[in-house]
Image: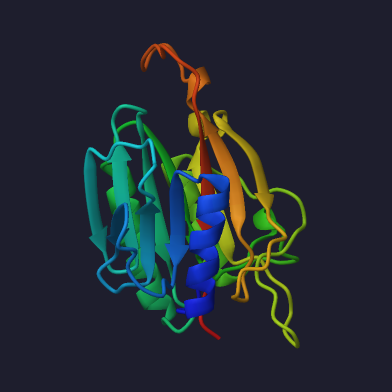
Length: 227
């Protein structure tokens, strides 16, 4: 959110209008007083469940650069992360290792999303840099796939090259439950665009649980970085 007051206000408005259940945020402006708010130890990554969210949290935790929660009733965990571009490659790798360590301890399905400030052909960039390669190696070890689709960029600032530093990863089974991943065109008040997708819990495999009703979660994935 670029720590921007206007972006924060627009986020609240969008959540109210669209009824999102889960918001994944990078560089938050401030803590939301309503609903459930989780953030990392450096206050650069957050998860917000608005007051009307249907999600039940059964576990949570954080570290430097990422925060996570688990929902056992729907059998998946979400990790929100922000990897700052000012970190050295060693600091970048340390944060990535910590995220991987947490991911390995998680049972069930997983979504990792955030502003990872890296480039890779796999998420629509013309080339892969050192950070992108390290993220892809981590994803391969964890059995994660890239959900980014299409060629719409997420970072757009006048006078700068448009890029896609905002990545969504998930386990393969989880990817089968995710629909309508897209970069939204809405004005955000920041230099990043929103990413939105839906998680359809109706089709969860019977080996996990039987669902008595149909329910979809709208997830707005908001990743923004500093200049």
